[in-house]
Image 1 (cartoon, protein in one colour):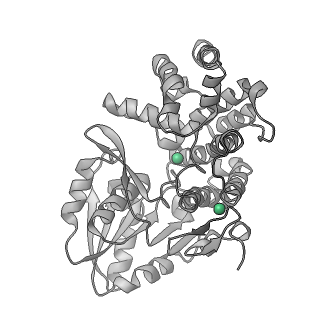
Image 2 (spheres, protein in one colour; image 1 turned 135 degrees about the vertical axis):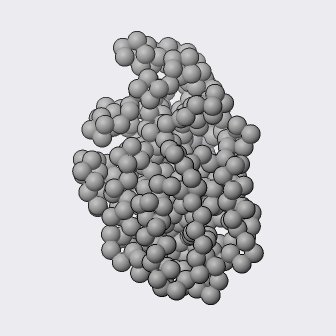
Length: 393
Ligand SMILES: [Zn+2]
Ligand SMILES: [Zn+2]
């Protein structure tokens, strides 16, 4: 069998298992991955065909129903499927909280055989958890390449005003029509790109901890993510023009990131200090009951901040780490019209300073911030970065 890192198409990775150089046996427990600009309707019909005799529940929100849900609904009804549709009524964004979970739960009947989720991050998270709890299978038809949770087994849900990581199942299939994805709001395309850009610092943190702490490491996972990153970075300008191939690369990278998490067994390959910032800022906004930026846009800014910290820490870094180029990272975000400073993202100075000291403690996972703290550098770095982001702004 071909090595996973040599596969030309992400669809080849579905369902495989292999012995890895890291000494473990890995598997991709997703039945089908199809990210294409043609043949998608046929693929959707094929994927749901085994449920033809039973009821399928199509789930969307007001927006995703409009852009894709109604089309899929018509196609399946015309093909003789027994279909019921549930649309979350939303004015802006659907909030992934206990109310959304409860609403969906009341729609699931004993005879529901499949949940067909049409949407992006939030729809996916809500369906994933409810299907896990009810034992129903689900398929996600993605409408935007905005976050890397499509291929993950966890659902971030807000319960009682606090963000929690609830359990979920892998989808039976992840299907995305690139001709639909490319028309997603530009802010969502930017967010997807930002979530991928974050892998630069995520991988640096992993490599750092491998050297310092001898942490379990998997070269296959790293290679998969590095390849995906390269595809996205070298096509940044084409993303801006909604080029189908460039949009497809971002979507594939997001799904791959979930696959790498599944291979490794936790989110280490995809999440480092930059994600801690995003989570910390999200939790702060949730506690104040205000809207927070899209996950990937926060991750992008977290990546800029973390990359600066790597620059400050250069004298203390062990040999063998890849060089992070803050100018390059900032340049890519500028070209996309994305935020590249916490100030521009709407993070106030007090929150930024607090997050410099606290965000890295959210997870017991070694990052450049642990090293900065150990070497007594965190105060100086925080002071200078705060000056840079807030007084020059
Ligand atoms: Zn992410
Ligand atoms: Zn491995």
